[in-house]
Structures are given as C-alpha cells and as structure tokens.
Image 1 (cartoon, rainbow, N blue to C red):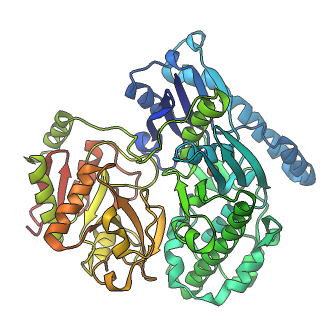
Image 2 (cartoon, protein in one colour):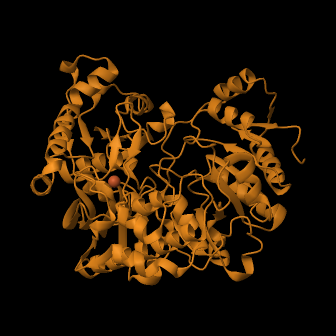
Image 3 (cartoon, rainbow, N blue to C red):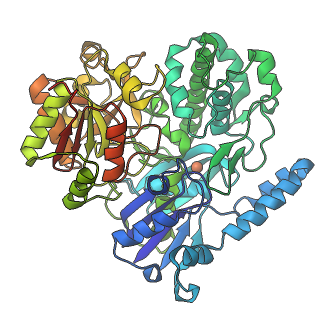
Length: 579
Ligand SMILES: [Fe+2]
C-alpha cells in the first residue's frame, strides 16, 4: 500500500512516502529547490518520493496532510470574535486555506496528470497529532507518552497524548495565543535573531549569559495548572497564524513578536548583525532557563497522567537539544524517541504513518533507527560532476578512503564528507557532513571563519562511536539524531576542546555500526590514529540548505576554504591542505 504524506503551505514543506507501512523516502522541498525553510507546495519532493519507489501518483492509494484547518475551529472562531480587528484576517486566511486544501488539483497540476486518474483517498490530520505520530510510530514502543510543542499549528502550541498500540489519544491541548515556541521566538527577535529557525542559535548563546533577567523572563511565561500562559502585554497581537507568514514564493517570514513593553523593560532591541552585548546573552540565558522550567513542568504533568518510562516527542521546540539532554535528570522518563525531523518537515511522516496505523489499522513496522531517507547518487554521476568542475580526484577502495580521510582529519584538515543517502531532518548525521578534528583548540574558529561564516559563539557537535559514549559523556542514553546535549566528563573536555561548549557540554551524535557502517568506520579509523573515538561533525553547507547533490557539494567545496572532499569513493585535495 502506497501512502504519500505531505507538509505543504507551511514552513519546511516536505513529502514522505511509505510502502506497506515502511518509510521508504522522505525529503524537505528546501533540499531540492534550495530555498531555505520553503513553505509552498513541495512539488519537487513529491516527484522525488514517487521516483524513489518507482511509482506514479496514480498508484498512490492515500494522501495524508499534516494540517487540518477544521481542527479546533470553535477555538479559532472564539478567538476571532474576541479580537474584532482580526476577523477579516481570519476570514482571508480561511479562504486561502480552503483553496490550498484542494490536494487533488495541486498534485495533478504539479505532476501534469489528469485529475480523473488520481484514485487516492485524502486525509487531513491535526498538526500536533501529526507531530506526535511522527515520533510514536517511528519509535520501538507499543505504548508511550506523546508530547508535541512548537510555535503553533492548527491553533494549538502544545499537545499531550497517550499512545498505545495503533492509537494516539489526545489528553491536553494548549491553545493560542499561549505558545512556548512563540515566547522563544519573541525574545530571539528582540535580541536580533529575526529569521525563522534562528532559535537554535540563541540556545547556543544562552550559556554565555548570567541570571540577571531570570526573574523578569519568568513573568512573561508562567506555569498554569497543567499548562502555561504568556503575559500577552509583552507580545504584539499575532493573529491565528501566530506571526508566521508564508509568502506566495514560499518564503517564511516572521512578524515582529515583541511589544513596546519589552523595550521599556530591557531597552533598545538589538539590530541583526550588531555586536552582541552582555544584555543579549543574559536574555538568552534567562529565556533558555524559563523554557526548560515550563518544559519540565509540562512533561512531568504528562508523566503523572501517562506513568510510563517512554516519551515520544516532536514539534519544533523538541529540537531544543539542551532541554532534551536534561529529561533524564528532571523527569521520571527513562527513554526518549525524538523524531530526527522534529520540526514541521516531520509532519509528512507523521500524517502518512497515522493514516497507515490509526486510520487503516495496519500493524506497526520496525523502528526508524536512522535518518538516511533521502536521495543517493551513483559513482558515475559523482565522477561526471567532479570532471565537469575541472577536478582530478583519486578513486580509492573503501579501506583506503577511510584511512586517508582519517589521516586528513588527524592532520587538522577540514573535510567535506558526502556519502550515501541524504539525511532526513535538519541535522547532518555523517552522510552530508563536514568533518574535522575535535581536539584542536583553533578548530571552532577555523570552521566558523573559513567555511560557515557565522558568529563566534556557534559551536560544533561531536559524532561518537556508541561504545565510547559513557566514557566521554555523563549520560549514556543514545542520541542518534544529535538531539541531546550532555555534559562532557571533566577528564575528556580538553581532548574534545573543539566540540566542548562553554558550559562543558556537547550536542552529540551517537554512531553505531549497524546504522551507518561507513561513518562508524571512519570514526574508528580516526580513533586508531589519535586515540579519540570522536570526530567533529557539522552540516555540509555554507548558509544554505544542506547540500543534496554531488554538484552542490562540489560547489560548496570550491567556494569555501574546505581542504579535502571525500565524495563517494573519490578524494580531492586542495593544494593548501596540510598533508
Ligand atoms: Fe509544528
């Protein structure tokens, strides 16, 4: 049975295809059209999914969309009536959504096929149920607590659920305008991070700050009964789209979230690219602190209602890996499954799997253990791309490729590592990665200045052989999708200085041989040379969506000061490389 899952006309538009309950291919449109966080219709991703399984759209039996404009309608109407200025906006938004709901027309247009040939049944699933579904149905568990939180989706910002067998039972919703994600975005904007998706940067800035504003920020977002509430006087009224607008060309734009009251309290907002002051760092600190307070308040409530060890979690806020890393210290949950595409691209998988299990009552399949669900490219395509770019690569056998790449990393070179299928979700996990030595004191600055062109405080992540996690980190719960930040053990901080953040933590990726043999063996080869079972891993890109094709990787290699490119079986070195 073929099911296509879609996230469309929403940030991070994406498509997933599942065949007999197994996710075969999934990709965000941004990777194909190179338009970061693209929020239009994912036409290229639909084609890529169908091509990947050799199917036509007329073969597809179900199409599931991770959005339902009818969900929580009463709450939306109630909100619009209480805010008369918003009624017109609400009606316009609703009309637009109605037009966009015609999935049949959208697909037949995109694929240039007669709509009469489409035989699929259409399903619309509420945003946060799709998030929880994306985590739970990919998890290994037969029952779990389900949790989703983000800026907003279908008028909800937070959802708690009991997941059992094939069903997801919603226990609680937090409705707009109360949104932990929006509170995070509001303060990010105030300190000059105004783009969609900038929240991760502020999370990295937070440990440089002090407690100065913790009391002030704790008044903006406070726990309330089982949920939380915002003090709306700090926010501009955002409407039912919670300040996120998708322009006709698919660009996602954020409206200003903070009100004048923020300026009265904290002074002038920082302009993007202006110098970061202690005030900004202290606000980031207080924000992350309060975010964690509310998060743990919520999931402890959830655990009391669903007293299990296992937590299946998604939603854009579930990308807050610092909070995720503290779950085992601050709640009774003992295991987490956080979907690799925890943000909105994950809705495509969630909607499709929900249709398979909850709607069609089909049995569960195996756990989704890795994120390698994207395209791969054959050797001849890679070779042609290298030749076209005027490069003369050396072709190496597997063992030689591993040994020589490890040698390059050990010598302090920055290596582009392009192998196998592209990752699903925002993290590069060893197939579209830039890798480097984790123990060289200047490596962070070298990468930020030479390749990534980003702020001094942005740090880098370690990929570690799973067998060594407990020796290097204070927690041994695996982090296969780079979604947990743990303390690095004191005796290992120097050895991992390039991936040790200012608060002695690392956002690790646990690598097993079963899930990525080539990448595991690369780290292992580096381990044999240096005694360190870890390499620094950052995404293969330069302020753009992560590279997808060999041509994009080669282009990125040529325009940045990367030293070495290991692409498929080929290796290319720049003359300035160390060895
Ligand atoms: Fe979401």
